[in-house]
Structure formats: C-alpha cells, structure tokens
Length: 446
View 1 (cartoon, rainbow, N blue to C red):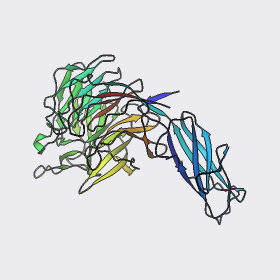
View 2: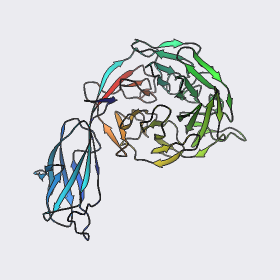
View 3: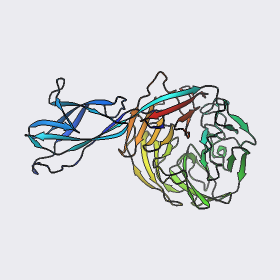
View 4: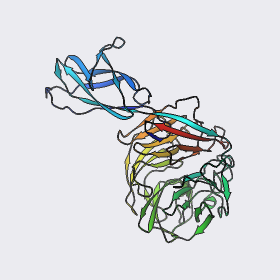
C-alpha cells in the first residue's frame, strides 16, 4: 500500500456520463442512474463495495452491468439492482451499463476511491503552551517552526518563535521573538527556508484597526525573527489567507480576505475584508503591488486556503479556499483561485463540504487535493472529523477516522504536512474558547 497524508478512507462519487450511442434510441431520454447505497459522500475502507442502484428509463430495464460485474435485482429495494465490485488502493472508475429491452443503453461512470486514515501519534506536552491562531511551518529538513498565537480565542497574542527539530520531544524557543505579538497572521515559506510573517493582531479579537500588526518580519529557524522594510499601503488584516509564487529572484505573495481595515482613507474602518492584494518580496524588502484595497472577491475571514495542484513549493498556481461568506448571515463558501504571478487571481466557485467550517485547519494532499479539519459551524458548534476535496472529482467527501482514537474537536488550530506523509495538527481552541495543548499526527493510506 502507498502512503499519503492524513486520515482518509474510501471515497465514492457518481459522475453521470453522456450517451455513448451503443444501440440507444436517439428519441428516448438517457436512463438516469441513482445510487441508493452506500452513501457516496462518505468514505469506506473495505477492499470490496456492494452497490445498490436504480435505473430510471421509459424503457424496460432488463439488466445492469457495473464494470465486469452483472448486477442482480435487489431483494430489499423495489426496481433496484445490486452488485459487488473489487477495489484497488486509490481511485477506481467503473462503467455502469444498463440494458433496455435487452439492448445496451447510455453508460454512466461510477468513481470509487479506496483509502484509510489513522491517528498514529498524540501528545499534550509537545507544544510549549496551549494556544490557537498560531502557524506551524515545516522546513525541508523537517524542522517545524511555531509562530505566535493567542491564549484563548479572543486572548492576548504571543510574540514567540519556537522550533522542533526532527525527533525532539519538545519545541524549543528561539530569540529574538517578534517585534510585536501577533495572532491570526500568515506564514509563507521562502526559497531560502526562512518564513515571511504578515498581518495578524495583538489579540485574538481586536477592537480597532490600531491593534492590527502592520510591520513585516522574517523568521529564521536558527536566529529568530527580524523586521524588514515595507513599501506601500500597510497590511492591515488578520484571519486572512495567503499564498506565494516564486519567480526568479522575486517571491509574489497574495493576501485574501480577513478582518481588517476596509477603508484606509479618509479614516480607517475595522470590518471584514473581501479583497485580494499582491506583494513582491525582493532583496529582503516587501513591496505592495496593489493599492490599499485590492480587487473585490468575497467578504471572508477565518477561512482556509490550500494548494490543490501538485506543483513544487512556491510554484502552486491553483488553490482552494473554504469558509463562510461573512455578511448579515453566514453562508458557506468554497472557491478555486487560479494564480498568475504578480496578478489578481481568477476565481471560480466550487462545491462545499457537507459541513461548512470556519477557522478550520487545511493541508494539501499530494495526488488528491486538500483536507480540512475541525472548525466551527455557523451556529458556533465545533465541526467534528475532516472533509477531503478530491480535485479530479471536484467534490468534498466526509472521511471517518478508523482506529480507537478520534480527532480532537477544535477550531483555530493548524495543520502542516511532514516529509514522511503524516499531517501534524496542533493547538487551537475548544468549545469554551480555551486554548489547547493537543498535538495529533495523522496518516492516510490508499
């Protein structure tokens, strides 16, 4: 079996195909295939799956074949057909071919992904303290850099830099820390393995624009944090998302959404930002390449953005963003951002998961797409488990976790991918907004 990141199980999705013309009457509508069981939005683990489906047609359905398996009439569902197919690890596609009055009808495609997920390690002493709203960044040598965060969902922010070296029992502090404490910031890994730190607030729940952190810092895993020059209208946002593209000597960074200054002039105004801004890091100076307020997309804060293409670090061009569109009511929203270096992204809508998530953790799954963990629902309840967006299917699937250990319910936590394929989930807040120590390491096998 091959290994990839995080807890995952079996994914099923039905994609109806067009008529292939084999013996089908052009005047008759194509038959409609509906799967009764299992629930195709939930993953399963077994190497075989028994599928029950119906075929709706104006003609008499005399048989159904799925892959090389001839289905039989169901004893439990009227007008339904049942068949069991074998699965291999990874993505499986089966042709569903109904026979109408003994003749082949229009075909459909049934897509099945077999996978499993497990929590392989947990700890409540690995992190130096309980916190959320922080970031964790994995370096190519598997060092993990922990930055900032806050004590409690609305608590005072932290100015600290901590690093865990491979195999170490704990995170260790690095000095100096930040010039000013921050939570809800973004961290971008640079080509030289340093980390660009942007935005954030001096607490988890700022009450004015003056509590947003404007200066720009770079963090080195050995020498701590340092401030660098910035040119342009200041960065005034937190709980935003960011992504980067490396082009020669320049690194372009795009920021989207967040809670911040939505007006700048004539006076600052704290609200939910809906714009994207692009910046260029060149020779240790960050230049704003757009105005103080960029192109309008959606008013979102507390969302998560994850690359979904398999490009190398710094070369990703396609990103998935999920969270709530924040306005008079909270509305779940998922978007795909297509990036061109130094330009505003092209944005398209995408399906949302079964449970929309605010302040979830997210991570790229190579060869598959993206996984989202935890978060809060629109009514404030914690969302359990995880959802996986499969790029090829353009769909989210709810993924149960196998084994005796379940995922900690939390929001405001962070997910990062390690070189061995595990995903490290850290910190966050519980249902009472208290900070958590919890660390979980997850593995997907498929």
